[in-house]
Structures are given as structure tokens and as C-alpha cells.
Image (tube, rainbow, N blue to C red; front, side):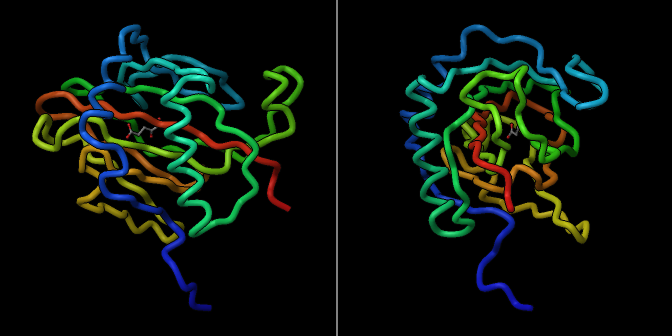
Length: 196
Ligand SMILES: O=C(O)CCC(=O)C(=O)O
């Protein structure tokens, strides 16, 4: 079967202007150590898997409005998933040695009663990432996506400041180690009813 479009990720060059990237960076003033999450082992800081500083922005934050806009455009073109809401956005800063190893943003788990009412019964469907740092502000720190055949997508556009990158949350992805400088990004997740 031949699919008509690349279903792995959607790219929008200069989705956010440089001034907007800077305005988002200005919001990043309460960084905390990034945690990893797994259904079996819960949430914990584990620097063998992920090393960065993060800050969560609630769904009502203006940054989430922009991320939802990028998500909707990509979703209309490619996946046409039912999306109910944006969960939250997360600002991330990677210093030298910072990275995030291969992971998925969902195991297709459905948010249950222990979660916020607006998330209950929903799953993470799409992840939206925008690199906020200028390309030459860092070395290493490459964002990559792995497909189901193990092929690693290393699109040079993934490094461009302000590019909108949208992909299904169940897709493996990573950020390689920062060798020089600092890289910041904003990530958000779109929730919707489970696929049937
Ligand atoms: O910082 C990035 O570009 C990616 C972050 C990421 O993969 C995540 O938070 O799930």
C-alpha cells in the first residue's frame, strides 16, 4: 500500500517568528528538573534517560493557544484526528550534556479518574514541538524521529528556530546530547478520544 503523504511528521517553516520565540523564552523563569514518566515506575528524575530543565504552562496560557493553532493546521492536512483540547505546554532547556533519550509521549494510556476532569477518558494523540533557540546557539542537540522500521529521520529543518514540528505522540523521538551552548524548545500535547 502506498500512502499519499508523509505520515510521520508535519513541518511548518517559520511557524513562529523569531520575536515570538524570544517572547516565549522570556516566560521561562521557573525551571525545574525534568522527570521521566512510566506506568510501572511512576514519575522520577532519571538523568540516564533525560537531562534538562522544564517549566509547565497551563492550557490557558497564550503559548498554548499558539501551539493549538500549529497542531490544528497539521492535523487538518495529515491525520484528521479528533482533538478535544491541548493538555499543557512545556518549556525545556538543555545545557551542555543535556539530552532526552528515545521515548514516546504516550503508551496510548487513557487518562483516568486520578487525573484532571478535562483530561479524563482522553489520550495523547499529537505532539507539537517548536525549537526556540537560534540554530547556531548550540552544537549537538538534534531532534530526531524513529519510524517503525528503525529508520531515523534527521531532517535539517528540525534545527530551525520557530519551525513547527507535529507528529503522533506514539512515535519514538529523541534529542541528542548538547555539545556546546544551550538549546530551548516548547512542546505541547493534544488530547482526544482513543482511536477506534
Ligand atoms: O525538546 C525537544 O525538542 C523535544 C522534547 C521531547 O521530546 C519531549 O518533551 O517529549
